[in-house]
Image (cartoon, rainbow, N blue to C red; front, side, top):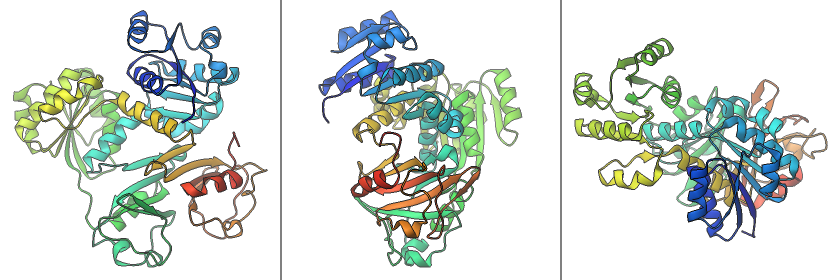
Length: 451
């Protein structure tokens, strides 16, 4: 990548690792931090410029050089401060802006509104990244699993196929998927292909299926030979992340137990999740875990607000015989120590956020939601303007190449998977699946804000 100028607001774990990796690569990096202790750490350990102050204040952003930076990254602990800082930075002249927020709901339901109001190029939620990681692990998905698009109205799922799947037994044209879903690609090892109607997958291939949220689970069930069984999941901790995971599990055939030591919070959980078993107690209490037969659980997920409690509870669950344990830690640098003790699924929300931002940078700032096979294909969201060549034409008239698929269209409150006779309209939000060699075609047919 050519030499770039970056401004990072917030010197926590995400900001620190971004600043360190980018400065090590020879880029100009400026860090904005209000906490003297964090500033001292950055100044001692990294070769970057450090600016003291609140990044939501224009003079501080000006001093940091936000007006001329290639990317402004607002990753502090304040959601509101991050959004305001990004808006001001873009107004001053920053070419792009990334914002990290905590709440998953904001990114799923209000992504487009927040991106447009605050001029954000990439909006991500540590809570949503964490929830997706946990669900993927619970469901046995070690890869992407599920990606939410179009404010949660559309999903992309990656599904492993076996010999019993209709997609491995029949050509694609003979497999009738639920309406508003489609197969956009097959992945075999490192090879990613867009299938034609006469193509048939092989056992062991991954199918990438795009569809509306209303039908995507039916599509997954159809191409999977075995019924997805989550089993019994124990969640230690009823905070924001614990509640988000419990809510997500409500759509699966799962028995959920939640352990919460605070009585008031436990009572609230009981009212929010009447189908779940709520246990008032300490997840690090071995006798409690024994009494509640935690050993019968399929997965134990430790999501309390304390790293030590999460790790201790996971070790106890493992010793009781739970086959799979997941522990959330905020200090990612200690993860390797706990893996030595046998806890292989220890993860940090901040590390997930760092990885997502690095993916955005490494993909040369493409507006992709999903990058596959190191950029061999991407999934894009594009708004159609009146001047867009694709506005006002049908898919058949567009004659898009095989490596460019219009996967879904959001038109007002309507969401659908288009076919050849569907006419695209100005104002539509389109979800595109694009192979690398067709990215220039996308810029011509579906120009974004910067094209």
